[in-house]
Length: 169
Image (cartoon, rainbow, N blue to C red; front, side, top):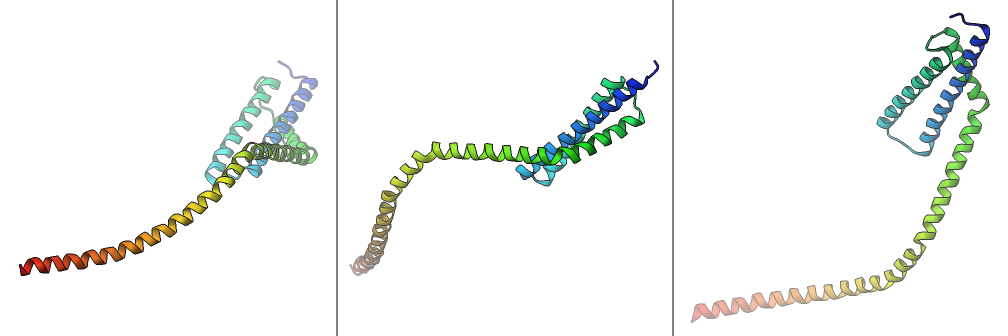
């Protein structure tokens, strides 16, 4: 099947679009890493997932546009697409996604505060009597402990007296 210039331009433009999609996926992973701190093990797993996604995108672009035939200008078009996206859209996309994430986080935080406000008030109101009873129980426990020590000494003393009295009898 002969490949016309129009087909080659179409394939090249599809590869540029594929490169832009790959760069967008990369930015999404960057945004995720900025928003949620992950350990190095999960970073390796995310990198593997990223490369699998990139391979699937490249396969889809090559298969859809060129029926699976690999040509050199497909990789050049992909590199140009990645470069164009990075220069033109990357900052805007990252800033807008981070703004959206921060806004959603603030909204959820506000909703959480509104929903938990009655429970916090109840907790504060109940904490004063609980603190009072804790202090009171500590004082009572100290006195009982002190009295108990004195009684234990008295019991030991009378125990010795009765033993001595039994021995004498």
